[in-house]
Length: 411
Image 1: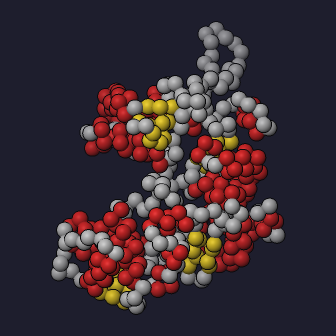
Image 2 (image 1 turned 135 degrees about the horizontal axis):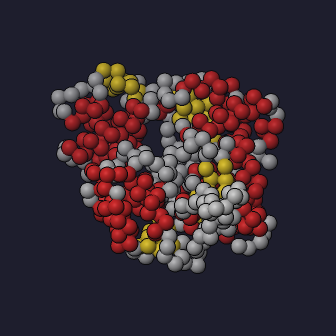
Image 3 (image 1 turned 30 degrees about the vertical axis):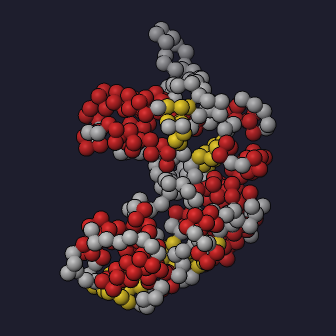
């Protein structure tokens, strides 16, 4: 068992290791001066245990020094919902070019020189560069991201003044952190596509590491999205994996016929909370029951068209006009697009055949009464409410069905 490394520790040290592991999952680059830097001494103290834990459970490499800790996760592959939200595709291109340029700069450089080096690297890579404002903003966004990571320090001036041709800044480079940023095997890849594929390779234990990484990094894992070998392994190991993830990372799993949902009871590892407080999130929550009324496919996914989503959103906006941000609901088509892409990022929707499919996991947010109302004239105590019978497939059926599923039964 991969968690046997915890058995060698006392209860307090076990709790500290799990705390450190959770922080590293959320912040794969933990550095002095950065968020939650106060945990670095504890990570350094338990570095041997943490290195063994991540290597055994997820097949991840962990580098720990006194000034930083770097967890090398697998890449997200072709998933468009994962990544730094402040960077556009153009910004990501300039981020890669900035890393290439910084390797030959030294410990300090001027902003103007760095921008010149980035553009030179772009030209060598066959990327067209311009002097328009959009291009400058993309470069500035890439440099701001490096500042947020601690790789660049704005010793004098700031990178945000890049759009002003007269602005200048002196930047200091942390060469130690710079060398720890890239996780993909650049030397082995002959193209960008191959690099993405190589970065998503399974760990040393193959299927075990591949599936477990998916459980930890994604809110919902559907058996239909796995290979036959991966799905068979997960079905056999569902219960033991639930115990393992809870013990090592404090995660809770909900296992049903169609797949497994993994949640963090403390919401610390949840980078995209749902339900949320934003207008898009609240409208999505209210829209799901209406979108799930359509007949499901054989695999449980519910097909919906853009017209139906637009109709539901329009009804919600018109019915509760004072409940929403006016800026968000001014354009219903944009609201629909934001809503669908939120569900896509949550694993609750996907595009298919020119339309959209809603996951059976979305039944989890179907409204249900808290209790059975007392009948007029009744003197008996309220009886517990019966679980509602939900239409179609549900990733979250009753507890009895869950036990049957786990024991190899059907539902």
